[in-house]
Image 1: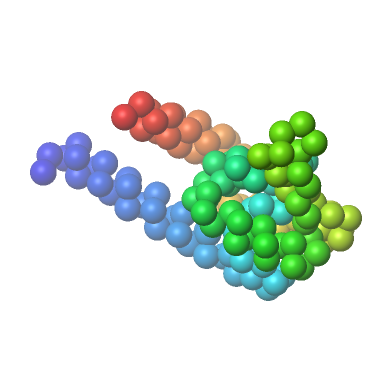
Image 2: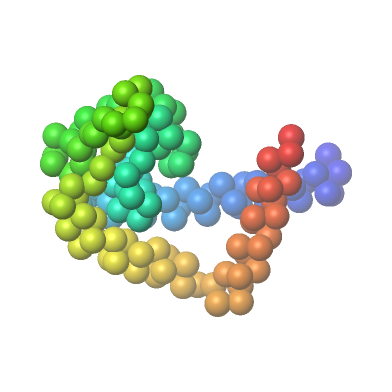
Length: 145
């Protein structure tokens, strides 16, 4: 193994471990609020982006489309979202956040955001900017394969 490939492997491991550690902390917080991470992601998407076709939610939150129905069912049972048929195309159904859902996510999102900020606080503003730039560059280059 060359020094260059060894360094690439080390970077992969460091990125993976950092993501896992941060994600575990974020997920613990979400679970204390009675949601699983996927339910939170769907609710947060609807809160910030408005009504979404069910068929497109999976791609926006990086979830297999088969799982979306289950997650939407759970959120609907909790009264946090509802389904609306598209009046122009009956094949399309939209997920819409309810007033109860807006209130719920509106109360917990600021704390979620603050927790993420705390988790990232070991980096300075400039280090965060550099990390964003480098990780984005890496992600975009991998997308070419």
